[in-house]
Length: 585
Image (tube, rainbow, N blue to C red):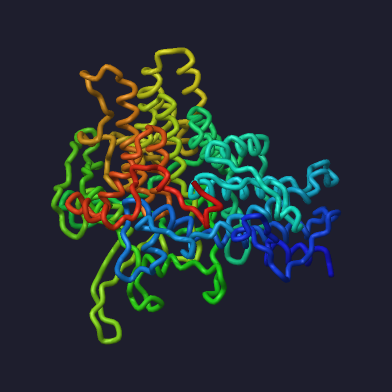
């Protein structure tokens, strides 16, 4: 049997997993033995192994979205939802829940451990370049991301970095790590690899393989954000933005939005590229998990069937926007400016009682639509969630990195910088006018000056200017659904002359704005529960998460939701899963 076929079988089919916790370290009876002296030193073997890991990642796609979204406050499950989905939403996940499966995470992890242990990184080509170093870095990123997801869901997890290939290794005891331990380990593990390029695998099926990798700089930002290293997290996110398209490149937020054409408030113009999976310099999706194309196979994504009505689910969706999400969206103030009037334009605020879900932020009404129809002779209500129209699962998107950058900058002590990312967009002119004047120490000025967003016309970061016809390419994130936020009198940097600790007051208020913006921009994308968790842990305030989740069905139904949810969410231990008493808090 050829070596590459052995590797392919091992990495794509079986992911040999054992352990004293045998329910999630499983032995597959027809596995192919991996000989101790075998190393990955042929290009074909390396590619087979890498695509094998991508294959294992598919099992994590749906649950990454579901576990992060159903436990938050932005969605609710319908009467058509399965018991497993309802169990997640009600924090009532038992060992039999299909989504409570640590072995799927460890299948990815052990494949990565095998690759890392067997990959011969000393092999060089005729130019002296390390031949497999790009693949090696990509696999380390897969492993770090998977461990982060695992510990966010279980709280404390067995930590294994060597491949498990024998029964003796399977039955060994392994240390456990909590969130901080996972973050510290992988920050050290990934930092030396931050500038390694992606492997050049070209297209895999119909997908550009560059969309299937986790950018190490972004991943380091997430690890540092969870670890509380806020300045470093901000620098990591900026490193991703400034190198996303190559060294010293640009990755502007863009101008995509949903806007009213006029203050008659009856027609909107939408340019949000939802569902676009094209790799370009201005790509919307940065990282995704590719779903299987064949429904009969185990890793076919069901997200389209959970969020949308169609023939596959008899036109019965399982997940719908919550009343809390609808109320948050409707409570925003939309600001219209007539750009034809230039400097003479004045802000006009849209009425708060517009029909057809057009009140407030326009993103929700564009993403989510409902209608009436008939199916098999029965009346039906249809639902469409535009974010789930393909078989693939978006994990990182372009607006998301700007929101994470704002969160890190805010907690690093620069709330004005963070606010401008939301309100105006960011470039060096904005930083010079709205951020640097408020840096009162040389060290603060030096830190902020590391963020270089050139304002060069046509190539750099160009914010909107109502008085000129500049071709802008950057707007504030809030403007993606609320019009001209930079002129909105209801969306201002928080100030209060009666507060003694002004900076901490501003940081918390801006953080609340960022969390609202995360909801408005990233709803249904699987980040909400973790965003709330991160802030609640940071503030040492479990109520920050609990109160929002309890309000998912509106303020008038808090008692009902509390009765439905099976755990006391004011106790952080109840935010995590357990599995047969062997993993979790």
